[in-house]
Amino acid sequence: KCNLRCTFCSQQLQEYNLADTVKKRRWFAITKELCKLGVKKILISGGGEPLCEPKLTFGIMKIAKRYGLTGRIINNGTLWTEKLVNKAIKIGWDNVIFSIDGSNPATHDFLRGKREAFNRIIENIKLFNKFKDRPSLEFTTVLNIYNYKEIPEIIKLASDLKIKSITVEPVCVNNPNVEKIKLNQKQRKLFQEKIIPESQKLATSLNINTNFPKFSELKFEKTGELRNSILKNTSNNFF
Image 1: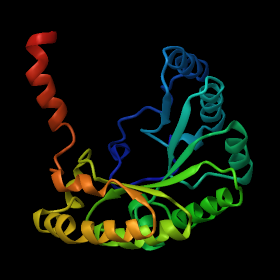
Image 2: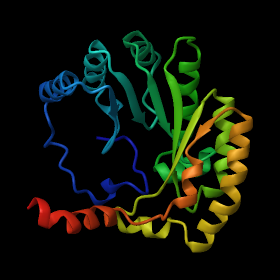
Image 3: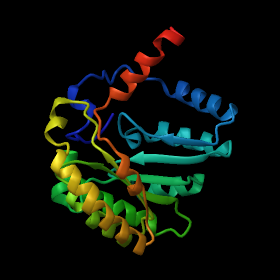
Image 4: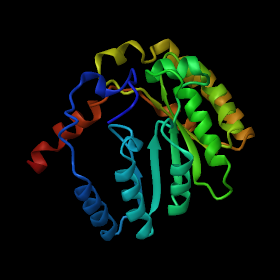
């Protein structure tokens, strides 16, 4: 489930039957199984918005922390309330990662498919910042033609909001619309040779961690190419 309609999301293909979902008790059982296997960290992410199902999500969070795991969650930032923020802090949750795809409402809300999404994120981060013992907060940004020049401004926004880490990832080509918003060769060159070095310098000056150095070796390949290559090269050995 998700309350947004992001341009680059695979849900645009409407492949999922939301009535066909894993039951809460099974999710909790899986979480306990992971914990008992000796897992050290857990990341709640992918496919939808975790806070669309707060009872399920916080149930998983409680189990993970009961077993002493480091807990991380990626979310779109729009559904937090003061009550839920308090709950996360009381559980002792370690890290909350906010998906933010623009330095301003126009860019972010356009890409995320809902008005006021940007402003809700800012309000909710400020809710977390009221508490001294809040989880560590991060940004994650999906890189595309609409926001790649805004990375320096996103870094400044992060600094203003006491965010200490930013991860930028190329948009995944998982539906036909994404072909229109991925960076072309000229834009990639500009991003890698100019925007990234300047952004890294700014981030360093503001004491913000990034994954920018990895972009020097990034190939911006289509989603699925690596998977297909692995399957092709391993099929004789495993099947």
